Image 1 (cartoon, helix red, strand yellow):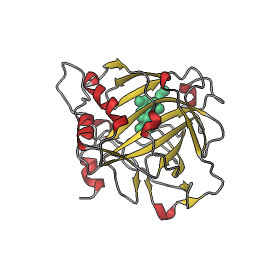
Image 2: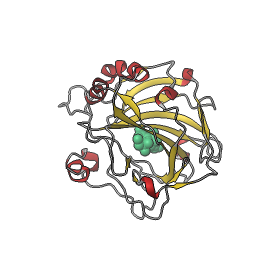
Image 3: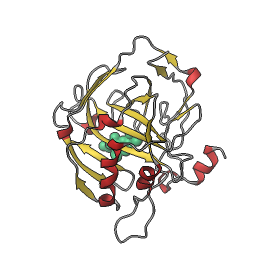
Image 4: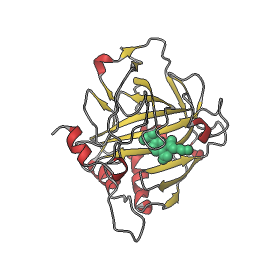
Length: 260
Ligand SMILES: CCCCCNS(=O)(=O)c1cc(S(N)(=O)=O)ccc1C(=O)O
Ligand SMILES: [Zn+2]
């Protein structure tokens, strides 16, 4: 079955009425058609330097689970790639499906992955706060990493072990000494394009950097994501699955690749 129909049927209430930005020209996510991406020899390697002691806590915000970082200084940053300057790590989170047939937000040649990791960074050089950067065309940089079914991921397991403690919406636990670069493939290849947040306010402020190589996780680790709840303690339980936005039109955009 095609992803489009079943996915729409499976959409989270947030997106039953497809959320579109009136006049949006650079919305995310998109399908990345490999053969239409354009190699850009001027793209630099992406440099990632995270300080694990900036890791603060994990919380379930009723949409995904996110790991938040102390972004009050330039301690966990990325620089290079398509970026004009350095960006500070704010948080990372995931999107996943009820079953392994879908779950990622971006697709490659219309192929979906069971899940996708997003590491959200903001431009603290040009803007005084994250909230300001969210409203600017070059305000955010999000690294996307696809998750595929395979071997158990030891780095992810520390995260998975903490999930039962944040099963319900608005629960939070302290989480320290985690370096999320262990979740990013060592292969330097990526695609990049100008896009948007995939959740409200859907602002067109994101330089997307999508890693070509996925990371491998096992079935138990994906199942651990699926035991989270959209709902608060005491509410009728709704499993946190299918927390992704539908594909958006490419419109007048080119996806560049850092590799031939
Ligand atoms: C001030 C309003 C910020 C709204 C966006 N916040 S965010 O951390 O960038 C974010 C990005 C994304 S995404 N998929 O990277 O666009 C998803 C969720 C969130 C979130 O708020 O949890
Ligand atoms: Zn996301």
